[in-house]
Length: 189
Image (cartoon, rainbow, N blue to C red; front, side, top):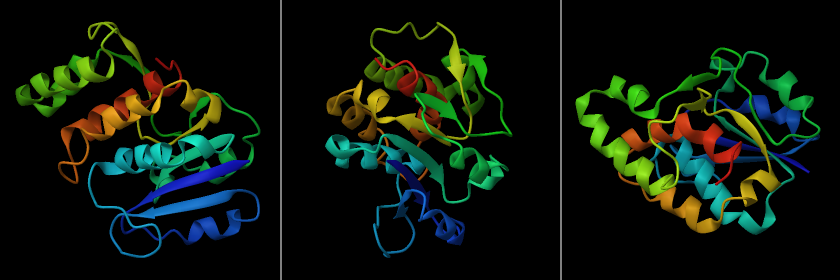
């Protein structure tokens, strides 16, 4: 089974209508109180983590996570997801290339005030991974991941990260998480 998980704010998601025959679609609404409402906190990461936590024992074999408008980051999104028959983890962005980063250097673009919160986040989420060790990052937070890779991290791990995201609609930690999905899901801890 393939499932598309959409974190929607105000985007028009009519584009999913043609997909409902080929995969299960779950849209979480962060703006309206329509079906599947969520509070507008934590960017798309809050939505993804909420879905993972609430469905941990019933995840799809292939989980496709996207914002309400994936086409800003992936012009070929619909074609890419139609071809997914198996996956461990893959970025679905075609506008941003994966690159190797140093976490603190990457977070420094948010100003000197971002460094201490970045260290707190990192040490809580990755206590056994050197913060100075470079890793591959995928921009855009649009990706597909297998159930098996999701289950390599336990519920406590996901709940810990979610705790960083419920403070505001655009927390710094949401940007941190966007940079770490590859590390979390491609190389589960």
